[in-house]
Image (tube, rainbow, N blue to C red):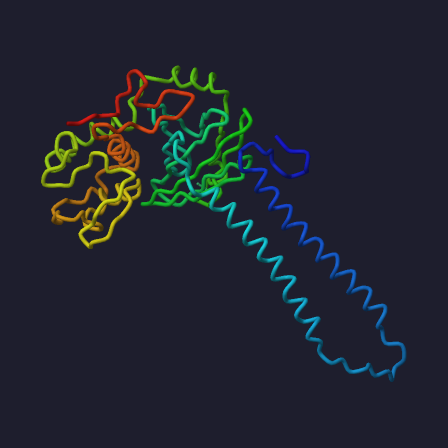
Length: 337
Ligand code: CUA
């Protein structure tokens, strides 16, 4: 699918027309100066050509006025590019709240995706139109890059780290998904589709694909089998290890007297490298789980810990469809005490 401008992919997200506008501005400024400079070059070549073999040109003294002018004008133009670009960048890479969350794991050479409601997909991502979707991404092996040209957005997925990407699709349809980072022999084949559906169709699709456990429920099972409960409590209420209930999205006081906002990356790090950022009041007694849990399992544990809520707290529900917790058959929310 193409837009009316040749070689430009279709514009299908809330951000894509803004990216295009900036892109056309950059191209316009570049084209304008390229034409201006080359035509002046040609004009001066002809106008000031040497007319007789013994001609000596008049010496030219500097002009402060001219130099100031050709410094200030480009400076202002460059700053408009910077300011515009920075504003767009922050809008694009700061994940919104109340987004639908999808977990993404890159792997040579496929994309594995899982919705918060449990549905799994490979090389396909179904999303509803006009809803914010947040991807929490990592990789099992090398660096890949999640790229949807029609949404004008991409982000690297990096081993041992979580990166996030968000978009809001504005048009139903099927859009290319590419890996935009060379990742080995079949990199060029690491493609897929993002399928944008009307909300009702999406709900149908979602309910037609149930039966799979939610990441939070799978994480809860792992929490038991890995023995996390022996220190963090059967319900995550804490014990020899810190309490896990209701910590997500809140500041955690660390042993080094710093406060840290608990996000997916921090939970992940605390599982793979527990000594890195100890919670105040707790000793370095937790063993590392590096190598014992796969990236999928790490994401499930993260989803489980995110789902732990204290009394009086609710999941941020998204308007338009029931939250994962409210769906029948899915029970990641746990109200403790
Ligand atoms: Cu994965 Cu290129």
